[in-house]
Length: 131
Image (cartoon, rainbow, N blue to C red; front, top):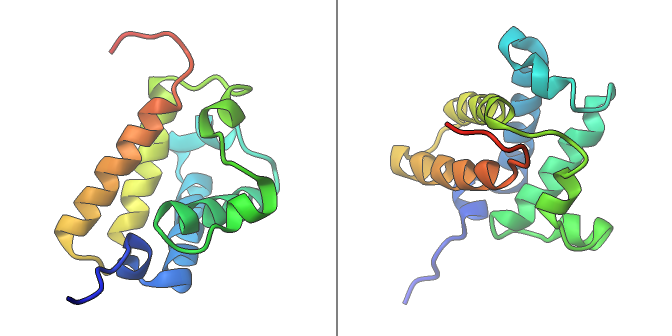
């Protein structure tokens, strides 16, 4: 039986995950309609880019870099200091959708990734709002 590739392997490993994260933050920094979430990040965006890379590496089934350096991600707890609502979620998802479009991925795989990102981003919401 052939080994089943992890999402980390399917996306292209370390190089591809780094590219995705770099593109994600480039879009966030250069797109006026994402200024709300840009304002939630430190001035030096490289710190956030590095953390996202380390997190996504493990989340996609690759090396658990984030856990090795910072411990359990506790995503929701780590995001509680920031007011995250529908607008912030949607801006984050916009950046990720645009970044994924720059990757050479099978359409179904990209759609599956985006679906998982959407579930996670919605889970990060901590401000009471109705859609």
